[in-house]
Image 1 (cartoon, one colour):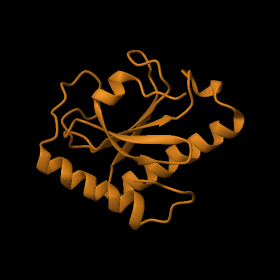
Image 2: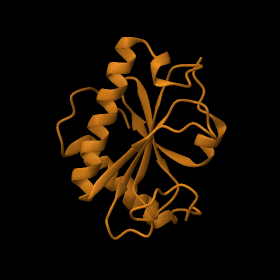
Image 3: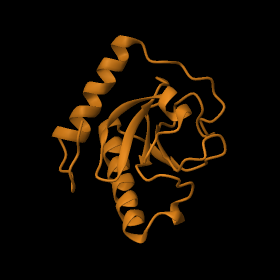
Image 4: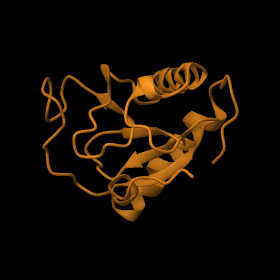
Length: 143
């Protein structure tokens, strides 16, 4: 049975579910930053997913990246799977701007600035519109 790693659960908010993956917003208001976690137990690496699940996961990741880039007018999308601190397979999707505080360096190691209740509500509304209502999704999405 699938269980989200406790660190991912503690550091993020549920946004919604794709057919294979759960999508979560990282609790750091410095960057629009989401993660996708396939709901498959015991998976640490992409190659451990079945071929069909690999295809679906990459499809969901690519679609999420494109929607975030459009919605937030990204200069660059950073998509990464590190797993050094959290072994459960998850892809980070981070919107980057050439004028953000870390550009051109990675965002890793920068202390997080948690969302306020108000800013979180605004971000959730923006994500709901981006991921549910305004762009054609090639598969089912549940929020």
